[in-house]
Image (tube, rainbow, N blue to C red; front, side):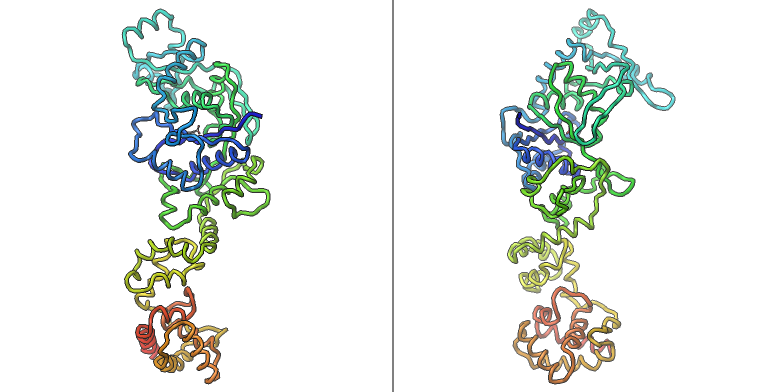
Length: 478
Ligand code: GLU
C-alpha cells in the first residue's frame, strides 16, 4: 500500500483557532496511525492578510501540542517549498497547462461588467463571457498587457460525484458551481487552484479539512481529472459549534489555542479535549495521551453531526491533568499565576501551591481562589451553621474565645502540631474536633469551602494573623 501522507494547510491569520488545531490533530493522527507522514503547508496567497509573526505562531502551536510535522517550511522535506507564496511559478505553469487542456480560460472582464451581472437579489454568477473569445484575440490582448484573471471552466450541466470517507457519496450539480478565479490579476493563485496543485505535487493521499469544503471539492476533482492526476481521498470534518446555532468562529476570535493556554489550561488537556470534538474513541475512555490517540484513532469514530464546544468539559479534563502533575510540576505551572496574585511577596508560594494542588481545575482561577489569604473577606455568619459538626453562630460565639486561648499557647504553628494540639483540647473539653475545626476555618477564612483544612491554613497565615482573624470574628459575633 502506498504511504499515507496528510497535510495541515493553515492560512497565517495570527492565531491558532481550536477548529484549525482539530484539523491538524486529525490529519496528524490519521497519518501516524497508518505509519504515514504529516506535512505542514502555509497557505499565504492572500498577501493583504499578512500578519506579522503568524507563521511562527503556527510552528510553535503545533510543536507545543506535540503535532510534530515530518515536512514543512522550517523543517524542510523533498516536496518544498512549503509556503505557497514561494510557489508562484509552479502555479503559473500549471494554470497555462490547464488552459491548454480546456479546464480553464483567460478572462478580461472589467469590474463594471462583472458588477452588471448582479441580479435583483444581489447574487452574481459569472456568465462564461470570455470562454469563447477567439484564440487570436486572447493572444493580442495578452500581448498588449491587458489585465486578466484565469478562471476555471466548469460544465454548465451534469452532476458531479465523489466519495467522502466520513460523509459518504457527495453529489453536486455543476449548475450550482461557478467559474471561479484560479489565478488573480496579480498573478497569485486562489485557494481553489493552489490546494489542488500542491496536494498533488506534495503527494498528499488523504485531504482532511472542514465540511465547508464538501461542496467545492467537485471543482477540485475536475482539475485532478483534467490533468489526468489521481484524486486524493477526502475526509471532511464536522463543524464545531459554540452552541446550538452558532459556529465557533475564527472571525470572532473565540477559542484560540493561545487564549486557553493563557487562561491556565494545560496543552495536553486542550489537545485531548480537541480530539473529542467530532471523534469518539471506541473504548469510551476520554482521557488519552497523544500516543494513545494515535493508537486508537479511526475514521468510523468521526461523527457527521456538528459537535458543541463545552468549556465545562474542558475544565473538568484540565482538572484531571492538573491532579496528575507532580508537586514540582504543579508549582512550576502555578507560579506565574501565584506571582500575579495578591499573595505574592506575602506568603510562601510553594506552600500555597501545595495547598492548591488538586483543588483547581484551571490555573487562571488561582488568584481569586486565594484572595482571602491577604484579607479576611466579609462573610455571612450563617456559615457557622453546620449540622454534621453540630455548630451554629451560638456555638461559634462560645468556642472562639477558647480556641483563641489555646492557639495563643501553641508555639509550633505547623499544621501537624496545630492539628494534634487542637484535637487534644477538643477531647479534654468533650467536644467533637470537627466542631472546633469548622468554627476555626470559618473564622479565619470566611469561607465554608477552602483549599486545605483549618490548621493547614493557620500554618500559612502564621500565628499573628490567625489570632487577629479570630479576634475579628469574635467581634463580628458579639
Ligand atoms: N487554508 C485553508 C484554510 O485555512 C486550508 C483548507 C484545506 O485544508 O484545504 O481553511
